Image 1 (cartoon, helix red, strand yellow):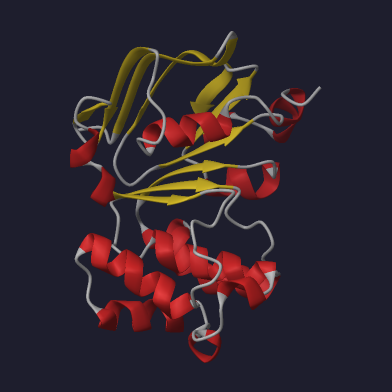
Image 2 (cartoon, rainbow, N blue to C red; image 1 turned 90 degrees about the vertical axis):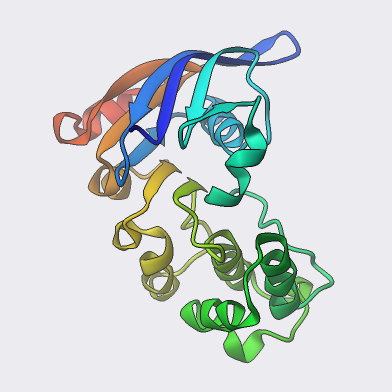
Length: 225
């Protein structure tokens, strides 16, 4: 059973069409990497899959559940790492994770495990507003994977992370996680290296879709011209 099935997905913002007749299938344990210039529709796609935006047309199935009609059934099975970290700035890293743990019925031991995994245990009791952007991103990774989601939706997940931090979060959100993933990226080298399926978007429409092994860097570069 595919984890994601899209058939004619369309999403508008007023008179502007952000996603226009997008169709694709993503099998379990595979990674789809979406490329395209700013405004191409990558973030909108992730937000629809995360149940944060309603589609205006088309069929959207996520984890064998139709959206938006049964969105409540999938929210606890999906982890979203977006441009915004979804953390309360006045709370500490530990308080933020404990808050999200309560929402998902996860115990405090899992919170401590996640803090250790992203090397934030020593800074866990400092307010998020005092942390560097890289540290905030690491806490956001811990939050997104706290409840062991089946599907990860990752919007430029390595933004603000130095090489050492990327190595830290790889087991949680990288190929090592062995989760089904949808990743937006502007980095052809890393993106193609992680992808099983490549999606290229331009002005909300599918300009490229295929197995990563059949797609070259020049085709990705062409999306940005």
